[in-house]
Length: 121
Length: 278
Image (cartoon, rainbow over all chains, first blue to last red; front, side, top):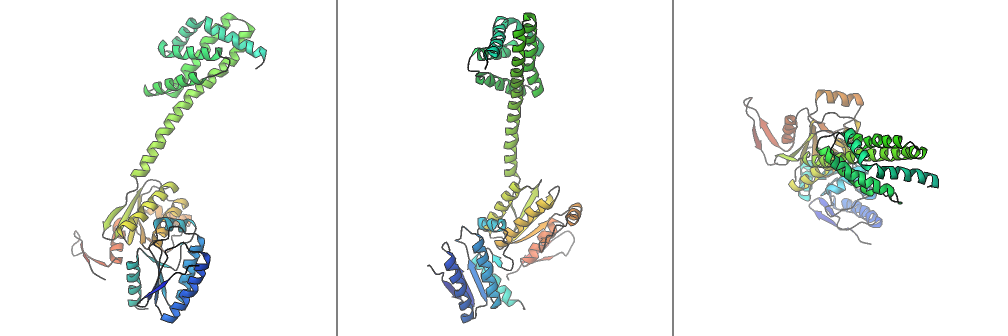
């Protein structure tokens, strides 16, 4: 089973999904991420799905679950780099990913998190 | 095919051959058209009837040509069909002067055949028309969905005409593709040119907005006319947290202020815009 690496940049965790995810890897990723958020005290999580070409309802739910878990641990989640085809598929599936923030690319995702944290809570 | 029916058909065929000149002349008079275009058709029909296999492919080919030719000349499809139906009258006269019961029975069968052929000219006409309409619809689809850049980081889609699912799909794809290419964070969907908004059109708009949002861009819907606003409220359509503006100008001002630009209006006629680094 392939494990998705979780990178740390300042107080942001970055997950770049490069391969087709198996169900098992997704579950492992969710656990790893929760552990990592707690151990590093991260305030933001960025999931980069630039390389993801195919999505199904399972992946959609994964993104929502990760966002919900991270929020419980006081870290904001941003999904970045979604392809047009993927966005259309998710909409057709009826998954609007409520509660997940999105940005066009990694750079803008980081800027979004910086902006949110600098704003008064 | 029974032997009896066979005999009646042969009788009609014999008549068609024996009285060829007279029937053709009469047909030409009735149809008020030139003898040349009818002669080929008549020959093909007579040969096809004499043939055991009942093969009408040649006749149909000639009819299709006749139908197209006459359509080009500006005749209505009814005119063309009437030309074909006139043959019935011409043949009926020949059958009546022949007077035999067999010929009369055969005429009923012949008349049904001519009905079919007349309708076929109609069909050819309709098919040709259908093709033109389809081509135009396709061209319209390509023409009618531009994505324009209003400002750095702000794009707009001026929608004109009725929105259906095929068109929404094209608009959505084009908009999302532009978002990727330009990295724009704000999109304005302007529906000034959309004549009516019903639940289905609203559904399509919402889908587009949600898809853009998933990509990380913010969408504003603008150009909502008073009647349309009224319709939307009456139908009970929920736009949720989607920003709507009355005019494209309002939407642009909103998008500019969201992207950090400051708009000041010292005089009514001039707008100065200054972008600030965040």
